[in-house]
Length: 234
Ligand SMILES: Cc1cc2nc3c(=O)[nH]c(=O)nc-3n(C[C@H](O)[C@H](O)[C@H](O)COP(=O)(O)OP(=O)(O)OC[C@H]3O[C@@H](n4cnc5c(N)ncnc54)[C@H](O)[C@@H]3O)c2cc1C
Image 1: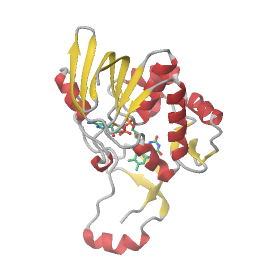
Image 2: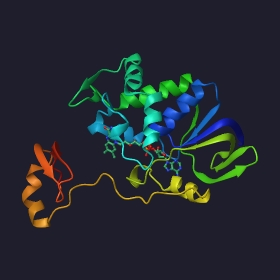
Image 3: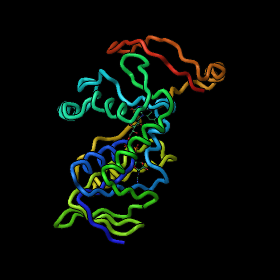
Image 4: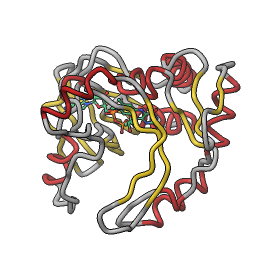
């Protein structure tokens, strides 16, 4: 069935849901599309199931980017304190772990429930288990062809995330759309990877799986040295 709205958002992860909420709160009609069965799957597994939902000291200097000004303007308009206020308005209990890291006391699912409630209040029309087959520019905006019919909108937001963990629904759709619209891309590489060790050493370390230790890391070229807690995974 064909539908028209002000904003169509692709991807119901953390970014897509927050964007849909803010657009809905500004009075825009919003359709949010995802091929997964449930929204925010990565939020569910984040922070070991308790979601490290913000860091109260986070600032633009903590972000590596080809465009450092982006983090400055984004964080000036929505601060960690703003997100914490939202969490508190929803009565979600939280605690600070270390160095300003804030986690849910109970479950990351509380954050998903909070985002769903905010989307409902902002009248966001969420369509799950919906495949996206094409995205086209039209004179008035964009046309998105999906397994649930065509959606046309004045504005398109692509929030389909990165490529990590395809088992959880990740695809390269955002990169395909960027290429289609001739947007320049930064070459991708894994950003969160396990330590890979010699198999013989791994066998000896396997019984330590799940243990965290305080460690000091030094790069071969001494560009940084910091204390951190290293989770050891076999
Ligand atoms: C194990 C783990 C722990 C983490 N812990 C934390 C933490 O504690 N704190 C923190 O801040 N971050 C954490 N992160 C990182 C965080 O989860 C991600 O940065 C964040 O979820 C990314 O959100 P996103 O909306 O950009 O993308 P995603 O969450 O990946 O959402 C993208 C959405 O788009 C949908 N999609 C993708 N392709 C298509 C397609 N072709 N058609 C339709 N829909 C599509 C997906 O189904 C998904 O719902 C963790 C990540 C991992 C893997």
